[in-house]
Image 1 (tube, rainbow, N blue to C red):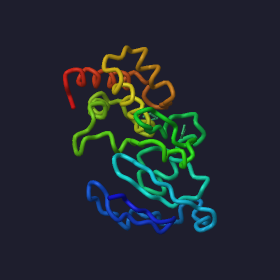
Image 2: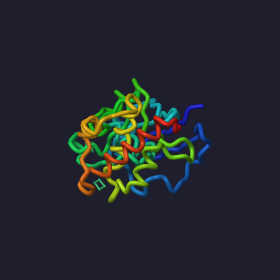
Image 3: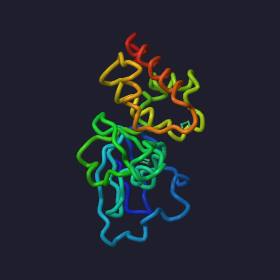
Image 4: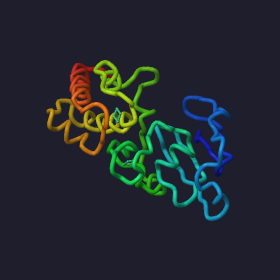
Length: 199
Ligand code: FES
Ligand code: FES
C-alpha cells in the first residue's frame, strides 16, 4: 500500500512497507521552506523511494533533495552546496548516481530512488557501509551518504574496480576531512567481500 503524505507542512505517514510508524517528532517544528505555497500551485508527486511509494504534496519548485529531506523525512542525503558541486546529495536513480539538489522533483517520478537509508539490508549494513566503519573512512561524515551511494553504484556494475576506477566513480563527491585514501581502501575492501559472496 502506498505511503500517503499530504501537503506541507501537515503531512502524515499512513503506512509503509516496513510498518514504521510516523512519529509526530519527525515533523518539522517550523514550516518547511516553501510551505507558504501550500494550495497555491502545489502539486502531488508520486515517488518510489527505497521500495516504498510516497505521494507528497510539494511546492512546484522543489528539488528531489528538498522533497526527500523536508517532505518525506529522509535526511540522510545532505544539503551541501545545493548547486551541483559537492556530491553530498547523491542518490541513486534506477541504480545510477544523480545529484538530487539539482533534480526537479517532478522528474523523479520517472525512476526508482535509492538513498543512503536504503542501502542496508534490514539491520545488516551494506558491505561498503561496514568497510567504511572498519577502515575509518568517515570523519565528520557529511560527505559519507553521497559517497556510499556512488560506491554502491560502482560496485553494482563492477566488483573488481581498480583504484583508478574507484577514484573516477567518486570524483564527483568532495570530502574535506579524510584525504580520500581510507575511502578508496574501504571501497576496495567492500569489493573483495562482494566477490566472496557477501550479500
Ligand atoms: S548538495 Fe548537491 S551537489 Fe552539493
Ligand atoms: S568525512 Fe568530513 S567531508 Fe568527508
